[in-house]
Length: 595
Image (cartoon, rainbow, N blue to C red; front, side):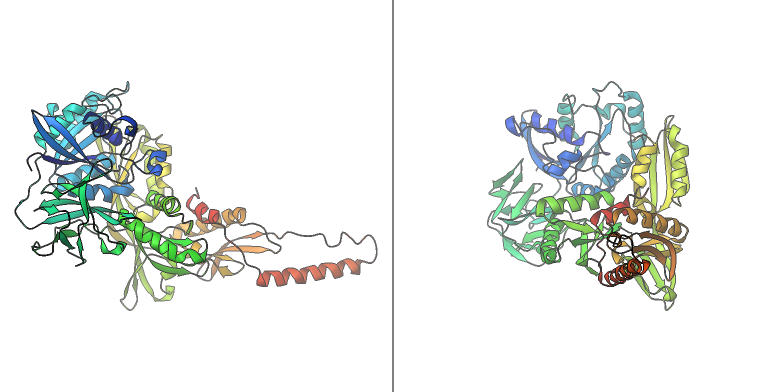
């Protein structure tokens, strides 16, 4: 056990985690030749295209230090706030963390929030200043920021570059010297924590685990603590670039197990694996169940694909434990699922993965957050969907979730950022200068206000120099109303939104104008209305295509023309009664992009 080290890499978005991991794999000869490419651990096409890490990736490296061979288990983690649950699970499987800070940008919001996660788990922190090869690096300023943040000595900070490989050897040596080996009893009953899982269509469910006590042999009879199901360990092994099978895994090892599980619901991230005969007394305290922030409905474009969508979501949840879903139906879209996401980027990625990995093309409804509704009779209802809101006459009060937002930026942009946050019903809590040219602003804001376009607008007004992080803080009473969209008097429930009363009229007007652009014209007039309860607050009309039925009348009595026009009018009226108005997917997506 003394030759094992488990550590993860934590940092803000785009501070060079994956590139630095590449250099470590290269130095330890874990990856070589044709396998060596940029972002080796980012194995999804989606990650490579966007240049972001979406999933945590575990890999084992071998490294010689002072004549002894060490096994280093590295987990590369995502940097975006929407994937912070991946980070928390990776941290639970480690004893140490590399805190990477970009020498050109300094400490940013997600750096701080990931650091707090690591400190809560008592991890040994190794500070690393990355991108030292760039001309605009500010080593002295960034060094001071790191010392202020974690209170380390000047010599503790390692200077590195993921591009040139500078300092990578020093990082690995520091990991061996500073990160403690795993604690655990090799002779105790077998006990392992599942921190991730994956579905393979040929081999069933593969679970990734960290052994805390005892050891496991291939073919052992094991059981999962919470689901109470037992299996035989058909194959166990360690996570190299691929999977590498082993006969035995011991205390402190991070590895995988394949036991022919075909049903995805039988494996839960955070569960404990133990032996059937000599089982451990209690489950490992895993991680808290994640609380989704944003909810939206996902519906198959063809209603016959509903069962396929259910199966795809089951398999996706195995690999993305922060996604939640439950059955729901809509008058406009048929049967589908109400899904919970950690943010809008997470929602976008899930849709993209459903399309690429499972060939499921879905329609998503307008995203919204979760509200607490109290009725006059004292009943409490948690509402994730505007159509689930009780009758307005029975509601006593509605509470909406508030977040505590941290924004770190340059002083030049304070005015514009404050205006943006105050326009979004934010309230300034504190303003703190980290250095002479970096300021941290803290705001209390309603979560619903940041769901749509807040992050994009923040990046625009700060020219990319603002970083943003948030956590949910409390629920507050709010004056909310349900805004419905009607097409020819028929409500489209998938476009309903819960919105603050002050913004409802303006938002309704913009929705109608946008839908007028997107809904194709028909042979009859289409009335688009925005309504709050029984009151119409905005209206647009899509005019019908008009065939000139009087063109064939050249001269003659006016009554001939009138007769043809009356006949056309009756036909249009009948068409309007039986005609259906199709709302294209672009209309649902455009609602998110109302700026």
